[in-house]
Image (cartoon, rainbow over all chains, first blue to last red; front, side):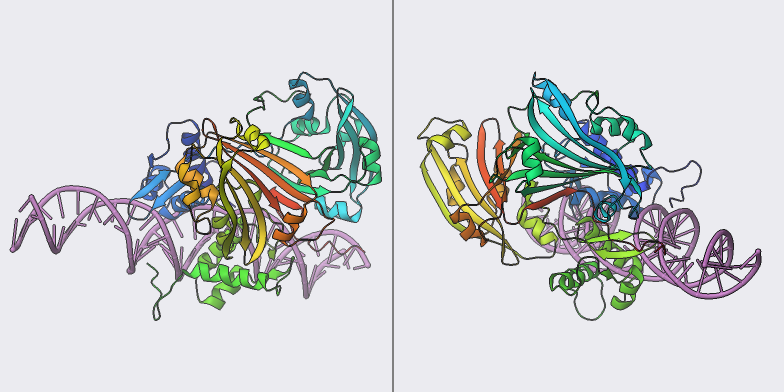
Length: 248
Length: 248
DNA sequence: TTACTATACTTGTATATACGGGTATGGTAC
DNA sequence: GTACCATACCCGTATATACAAGTATAGTAA
């Protein structure tokens, strides 16, 4: 698809230019207000046409990274601190970071042909073999998350052999396949009977459901993460920095 | 700037095409999964080159309105409100980016001594002067967000003089003080009577509440953003259902 | 000095063209 | 019927080119 002569181009030219700019901004070399090279300069530097450089600049402008003024130039936009929305973080690591004890109970782990709705979610034909796991994560013995996950069996054939009381499904998947994309849908729901029982919560209280789908090219996994209680915090003053490797 | 011969073009060609598509979707003529005309068909219909039609389609895809599959076609994406959760910049801009009309209704804007709970949130002594604003954001005249905001009056003394039907509080604050940190807490709640009335929603359905606090050194503002409906998507993509191989 | 103008940039948009690769379909050979 | 393949689409990317319009600056004329 990318017809770059010579070496194989893993990503499009305009993506390389975007990466180049974002890298400089991230490293702090180009600060807010810095004037970035013009379309033509980038085109010359990367040996592409101006249209290609223009696309990179335009998309970064739409994304709020750059600001352009016709006739003047392109500048690094004001940096808005935004919490990494939903880091693919490990609930086990997070709990241990709080100095608490993590444990998990596996309620089921099966292989079966994909039901119709799950097939749609995973973008596979119905009846394709998939894995289905249901487990509860505990913090100091208290239920903190119900994880109901479906996995494309063809992509992760050994999923069903794992001991998910020792390694979380998310951690296992992350170390096995490189994630390319993540989707989060947050939903406010009233928990059903099974959920209330597994999480030991009362009826009548709304719950947060985070529906997370992860891609690695094709869709690897689709998970429903239900939290008892009803709050989910991202960022903020009291959250310690979590920037460590993916263990457990 | 737009060199369309004949009559003066008020907006670029690709904008016209975007508007054309968004209009059909908004009017319900093209529902989720509907296959929209291809690049070439649109190019012929509007007498433009495919690149121009392609830009319109690509931008609507980036905006989440359409979904494209190489080799197959372009489809109307599932409509999930996906903006206001973490207003990166401006809810007004985002709504306008979707080709819709933004408006806002200011329900109240007062200065008063901080109540006890608000003082805690803003980390100021009780009775400190604060501003309190309540407004509703509308997309095409439909209520999409209730914003209940408290602002540290000492840090933004002119807050109360603004016309928030013209500039959103968030945009005003952002251009005035450099943000250093943001906290988001997502909460599933049952809306109270006032909220249901302002957002014109029915009882019995859980809502998502985003509690957003912003720092600029000290805490500048604390806002509750309540969304009708209960689903919000970040990232990911809508993939239309495709024909399975003829295996029945 | 002041005012104007030519010039050399910048970004914004639009076109015609090209090729790569994915997907569905219809036809053909088995 | 089944398996294969040619074909005609689709989208993704890239290029060279062109003109419109905004902006800054150097140079010139008043």
